[in-house]
Image (cartoon, rainbow, N blue to C red):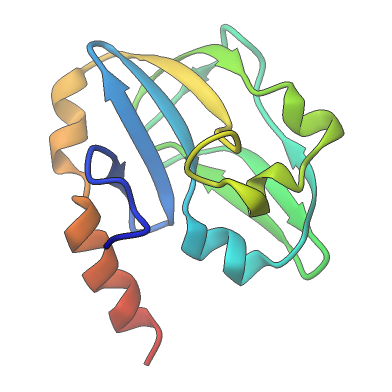
Amino acid sequence: MSDYPSSYRFTRDHEWIAVEGAKGKIGITSYAQSELGDVVYVELPKVGDAVTAGASFGTVESVKAVSEIFSPVTGTVTEINAHLNNAPETLNQDPHGEGWLIKVSLNDPAEVEKLLSAEDYQTFISSQQH
C-alpha cells in the first residue's frame, strides 16, 4: 500500500499535484514534511498570481529550516489554503489531503504528463535515503 495517492503526479522537489480537467491542487509530499519537521509557517502566493513550472511560488518554514516550494506546472492561482495561516501543522498531519497549498488553472494540462507517477516518485525517494 502506497502512502502516495496513485492519481497524483510528483516532482523531484517533493511537490504533488492532483489534476482535475484543467485545474490542479498542489501540495508537498509526506516525504517533504517529514524531512522538514514541524511546520510553523507557510507563505503562499495570492489568488491571481502566475506560477511557473519549476519556479518557487512560496515557502514552508519549519522548526529546522525554511524551504522553497516549487510549482509542478505553469498556471494561475485560483485558490489558496487559508486554513494553513492558522494551522500550518496541517501540512504535517495530512500533507496529501487537508494540507494542500494552492489550486491553479493549468496553462497546459499535458505538462503534468512529464511529472513522476506515485510509483516513480517512491522509487526516487528511496534512492535519496541511502
